[in-house]
Image (tube, rainbow, N blue to C red; front, side, top):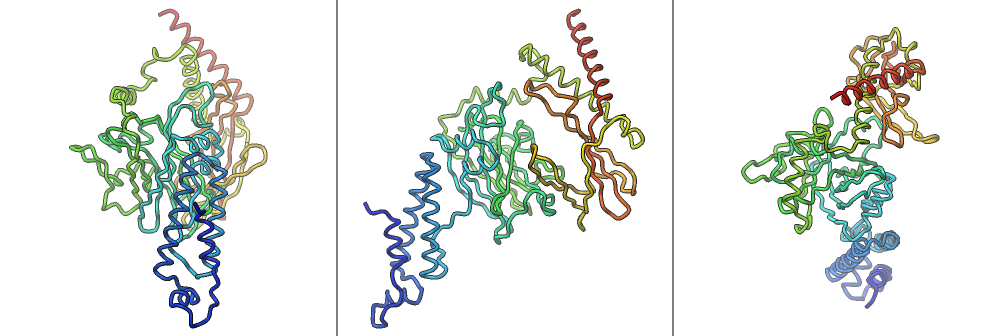
Length: 451
């Protein structure tokens, strides 16, 4: 069987400078116009090429897929040279799911998307200025680098691509327009109200990246393939005011359990039915999943191992003490209780959006944006605004560390710029908090022993 690439090259690179007396078909080619037969042949060859590429992708041949993609791109370029603008040939606009996972430094997930169980959907919905494409989905146990090695997690993943229909690149993280474009990706289950059962309500999360002007979302949560007989959806909508689920985006039909797009919604509200194998349905497991959502483990301490109980108590206590500590910090005593970790002067744009930088590892730098209205309670120049939230990282044993606590302050300057600072408790404060934490934990343990 001839390679369709060779046939397409032969047609594409055929000479166009031919005598006037030749056939009408050849004359059309010389005028850079395809005849109906040629258009049909090009369409068939293009379909053959894309089918071959998709087959390679399904087989997990990542390197072969990249090689074919480059070859096809070269042929498309040759066709444009020969015939001008040819819209019949498909262009490669997106990364494939494995590449998206690689872009977010998730090697395990990239490998999972090259496996036999991965689904490749590639369906697109358009909403005015934006188009949303569901690229694919996969599921399995511990197939993500985000999951710690000592924790077993069975999760489902989907990858969505968001692009502008006019070809304008999506803004990168750190660009002033980035903070203005907030979207919420999520899985949904037929029969369950999406307002209550979405990515937030089902303990899910997502990561994202912008590559070549396209914004990619990796959506993850506990594996819900047990609902395959009911129906599983994947969606991306314009976020609500808090950056979470927008209750106006979709309509829940209580009688049928269906979830549909709200046709009156003015923003993005893409919704795709995920083609999950119905043989993976497990009604008993699905029932338990819903029960566990409504009865979280934190309310069932007996379900945890002794080490998990100990870690949970310690993490709760250190979180509580960190919160109490932050409430004691004021503009007057901050230099006595804390040490300055970083500060930078930012210039808000006309919409009050400003960009700040942050460290990634030892050598890299990232950028993010914030809105002044979200950061300031008092915009009076010289007044320190201390954020209510704080960061509290953990070590390899998954215990929270008070040494890693950080929080942010904001101050408006006379010239309209913003000073954004990051603080952490100083060594004296850390020592006091740790001592109090140990004392409280020991007291609680002694009380438990007495009972």
